[in-house]
Length: 230
Image (cartoon, rainbow, N blue to C red; front, side, top):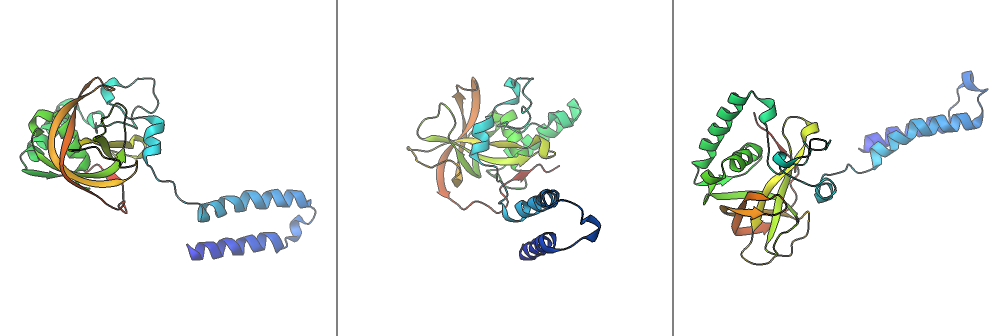
């Protein structure tokens, strides 16, 4: 970063104080405009912070189930609560893969949702919720307060990449505490509990809910995104 800043400063100095005799006839304002157009992108790239996806993105675009998407919504593939990779496979292949994942993850006494299995395991949970009822599951994600939640409920999310950045989405679980909580959006929490199901009125359907036994606040991970493992 420091080397980049020095290079930018050097370039800026040459641009402001250097001489190019082949363009001596140019007016000063033409040169100024040229310098600004060249230098501004360099400076902003060096000194402005990189944007991070957080709860503001979720709030702006919302999150939803693919089954109730509006086909005219250009963001329909971006903000979904459950991962859906069906569009990348032939139908029979997808069903076979999904069932294999269900059998693999549901037989575990303790399922830890981590970087390696986050999206695949979640997809199995949402498609076969009955096979995961009463299973012990752990999850880490950032807090998001969705609509129509009780004071002891919230969502834990991670942004994930299924295939490419074009289908990036927000994925996770509703979690339920044994008492009311006051965590703010974007607080990162690691939690563990038993999976159950509940009716969520905004979606007009039953969704998985993790009833927590233990939890604690954690630092935001260096790599907050989850990637689909094929």
